[in-house]
Length: 126
Image (cartoon, rainbow, N blue to C red; front, side, top):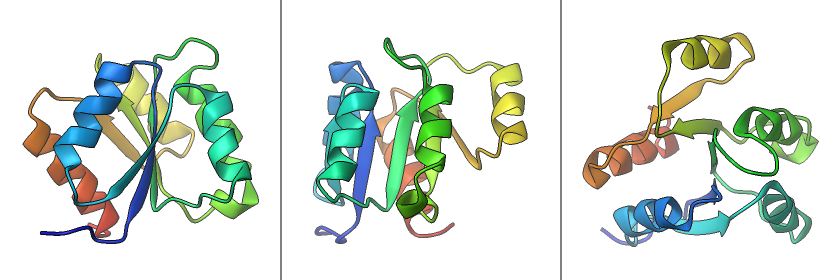
């Protein structure tokens, strides 16, 4: 299957995790990467409006929760799904995510096919 024309932005300060997502998706979607909240904002300033934003919870400068709120406040991104992704899932985090309006909470898995399936399902509106 070739590129679907969909774009995602992955915001994670761990380059290994970014590469895992990027390589796992292969040519299915165009993946843009940001290692910080600042880099993510630079993508938007340059005009990127992705079909999905994946934000890691554990980041150095601004954690994923703070970045979620910041991104949600950008009017051009109001229709873009923002998914919180974590390597260390905790039940209270998932509950907190739902309380603040996060509709997509993804537990990062080492199974790249499973992660790819979750991401593609989001992009397909399922």
